[in-house]
Amino acid sequence: MSFGRPKEHIHPDAKKAWRIKGGIALFIELLFVVGYFILARFVDVFPMFVLFILLGLTALAGVVQIVIIPAVRMIYWGYDIREDEIDIQYGLIVFKRSLIPMTKVQHVDTEHGPILRLFSLATLSISTAGTTHKIPALRQETAQALRAKISNLALVSDEDV
Amino acid sequence: MQRQHPAAILALGVETFKNLGFAIVLGGIAGIGSFDLFRGVLIIAGIIIAVALLSLLIGLWSWAFFRYQYESDALHTISGAFLKKRRHIKSERVQTVNREAGVILRALKLTSIRIETAGGLQEAELYVRALRKEEAAAIEETLKGDVVSEDSAPDTVYQADTQRLFIAGATSGGSGFVALIGLAVIGQLIAMIPDDMMERVASWVLAGGVLIILALTISYLFSSWLISLVRYLIRYAFFTVTRENDEIHISHGLIVKRKLSLKLHRVQAVKVVEGLIRQPFSLATVEVEAAGGSAYESSQKFVLFPLLKRDQIGAHLDRILPEFNVDAEITPVPRRALTRYMIRGCGWFVLLTPLFYFVPETLFLLVLLPVFIVFSVLRFRDAGHALHDDLLISQFRYFARTRAYTFKRHIQALEWHRNILQRFRKLASLQSTVLSAPEKAAFKVKDISEEDVWALYKWYSRS
Image (cartoon, rainbow over all chains, first blue to last red; front, side, top):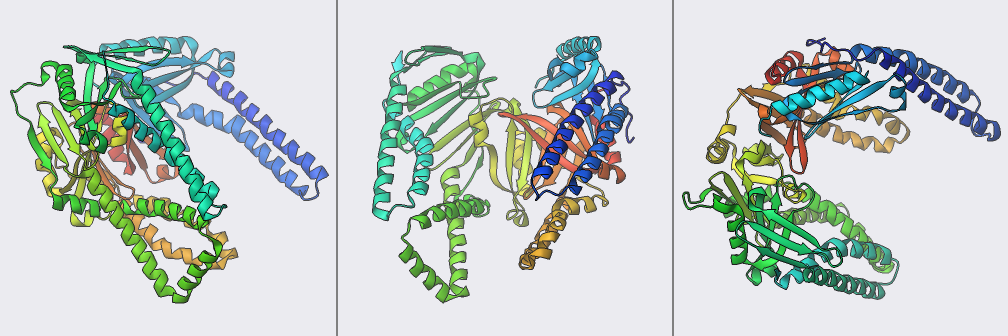
C-alpha cells in the first residue's frame, strides 16, 4: 500500500452477501449455457464443442465470482470517518480512494437491498454537491449511527461553498 | 400587472421555430429526397410555413397568459392559461440578472431579461422575453437593491479589439465542426439532385482527376474555416469584461447581444485553455467555472478572456481574480508514465491487426499512427500538477492543453484511481471535482507518481 490504509473495515457478513450475489450471477450465466445447448441441439450451425468451452468458462467465472472476488473485496475495502473528513478506499484491480471534507457533505442516506437485509446490513451513501460515495455492507445500526454522526459533523462545520 | 411588449410573441415564435422547425425541416429534406425536385421544394415550403404559424401561435399563447409587475424589492409574475402559476422573487435571493437582445428586439429598442436565484438549476427562474430597455434597467436596479451604488464606476478589464478577435476566430478550431455539419447537409442535398445531373457532375469531377478533387477539398476546408471565423466574429464581437465591485459583467455579440453577470464569490475554478493552433503562438483562452446559475448559463460557458498572450494572463487576472494569479512550477508526471500514455493513445491499433491481416487494403490506416503517437507524447509531456499554498493546479491535455486552478476550499472531493497496471508502476490518477453550473466539473491528471499522490492526500486532508 502506498499510503496508510483507512482503519475501519466493513462487516464480515458482506462477504456472504457478495457470495449470494455471485451465485445469482452464476445462475444467470448458466441459463445462457442452457440456451446455447438447446440452440446447438436443434440448429446445425452451432457446434456442440463450444458448449464445453462455455461450461468451462462458467465454472471458472463461478469460482471467481463466489470465492475470489468477495474475499479480495473484503480485504481492500476500508473507510474512516474522522472529525472533519471521510476517507474511503476500495478495489484491487481498479483501486479508488476518495477524500471528502465534512464541510462538503450535502446529505447522507442509508439503503438496503433484499440481499443486504438478509444479513441486516445497509449501504451508506454520502453525497456532496458534485459526487456520490458509497460504503457498502455496514451493520444497519452502524450505518444509522454513522449517518447521524456525519449529519451532525457536517452541520457543525459550515464553510462557504 | 402588465403584459410583455408584443414583440415577445415574435421572439418566442422565432425561438420555437428554431428549436422545432430545424429538426422537422431536416427530417423533411431527408424524407423527400425520393420525390422529384419541384414537389420536394413545395412540400418543404409547406412544412416551413406550417411550423412558422404554429410557432407564432405558441408565442401568442404564452404572451397572452404571462403578466408581471415589479415593486421596490420584489418581482411578481402570473403565467399559465388554466393553471395560474404565481411567482414572487425577492431581491435578496436574486443571484444574477442577464440581458440578451436579438435583432428584432434591438431594432425595437427592447431587450429580454433573465433573473436567476440561488439554487435554480433547471431553468431560468424568471424570463421576460421583451420589454423596454429602460424598464429592464429599472428592474435590474430594484432587484439588486443597494448593491448598485455610485461609489465605484465600472472598470473595464478586457476589451477585444478587432485584430485580437480576428486572430481568436481564425485559431478557434471551430472549422472542423463546421466542416462536419456541412458534410451532413451536402449529403442530404445530394439525395435531392436528379440522378442524370449527378452523373454528369461525377463524370466531370472524375475526368479532372486528382487535381480537381484536391482543389475541391481545399476550397471546402477553406470555406469551412471562413464560416467558422465569421461565426466566431458575430458571436464574440465587442467582447468586453468590466468589473463593478464584486461583480463582473461580460458582454459580447454582434447580432444577438449577450450580457452576463457573475458575482466573484461564485468562481470555483479558473481554466487556461491553449488550443492546438493557439499554443504555438503562445495564445490562450481563460474560462471560469462558476457555482450556482442555471442550465442556460452553463450552455454559455463563462469565457473570461477569449484571447490573451500567455504572459498577459497574470496581469489581467490581477484585476479580477488576483488570488488565481499564481506562477507555480508544474511537476510533470514521471517518465515511467510515458508507456502508459502511449498504450492509452495508440494501444487500440493492436486491435486492428486482424483487420490489416484479412483486408490488406486497410493498411493505409497506419498513416494515422504517427499522429496518435505525437498526441500521446504531448499528453504525457503536458500532464502534471502543482501546489501553491491552498491552490491546486492541474494540467492535462486531450486536444487543447488545459491548466485548471482551484482552491482547496472549492474542491468537493479529491479522488485517486489506480488500476492494476498503474499499481505495478507506482502511479495513480488524480481527480478533483468542483461545482460548476449546472452540476460539476472534474479535473483529471493521469499517472501521477505515488509519492506525489501521497503529498496531495496530505495537502487536502484536514486532519
